[in-house]
Length: 426
Ligand SMILES: *Cc1c(COP(=O)(O)O)cnc(C)c1O
Image (tube, rainbow, N blue to C red):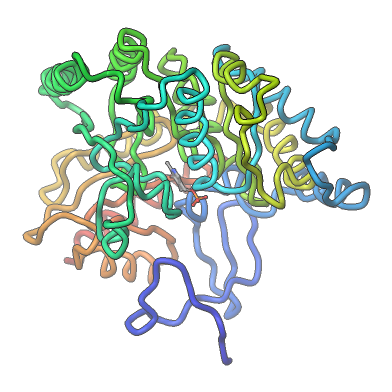
């Protein structure tokens, strides 16, 4: 069949023909040729309840019949109001104002612009830089690339990206004896950077607890607590990109809640609608909102998107949050399931840095090649997993699981069995 489609993150010349998916149900995808594939990564980390969730499908149908879309300047609607109220109920109490957009990258763009203009509105126009982390990924739009690690993905655009300051991320793993020293060193680096120069910085931006696309790198809650102290000490905004870690991923509703830290701004997307529709929010504190609240038109936040707060997306998100409330035990219980399986792999000679955070587990495959996204072992692993009926998509030499929360205990065991078998085949 002829295709006119250019796929994301894909080199069309070398890629195999994309698999045509006919339907999805729970953890399983059904292909056109009838094959069943287990979705072990929630389709790029979004379908948190699994595919075809009937309650979300029903909420979408109902909302579409009432109001599909309306301009969100000068107008508002019930799904947006109810969703904002529900989000505030579950977010740290520092966060009070919800700004809507439609994907993770735009949620980050909004956060960056809010942070910079916050200081400008307060008369501190020189606070234009952000402190970011090595290995960070915040999206593919130009602003979001500028606050992420310079990498293969950004290479063609590096000259266009505004300057950010990068510090190391204290990534850790099970039985890591060195983690406190790493954290202390990074905190010391940060203090040295800030003493006398804090007035150049608008804030600190981090993927809290887990860096996603950078290789599923996990840090401790204690590090976030130390980081929060520094942000307060030097009067910097603390910005959390919870686009991936939100909505149960880390074993709690949000990484901020799990670590008991209070960011000034948070970005959410991916799991927000249960994976049904594109939606995102950037939620900020009253301190930030107040700096824009003025009779002076130049203090307005001039930002918006055509589909801002799409009512059907909001209805899907509300249904997804209600489901999360009902099934919270499943995302809370998954970590111990991962741990049991990881313990069995602990002495495997081809594995190192086994790690887990809530529903997410990851491991590095020992390989002679350089570690990184282009490590040739990634595509080969992907092919062998798929041949066994599992959708796993290694990031270079990093194999990770990020399953929908509806997955059964037996199905999790099956994924680990598949990983073991594939490793043995090398
Ligand atoms: C995926 C991701 C983004 C970008 O989200 P998109 O919806 O793909 O634009 C931003 N930040 C983090 C942490 C992500 O995992």
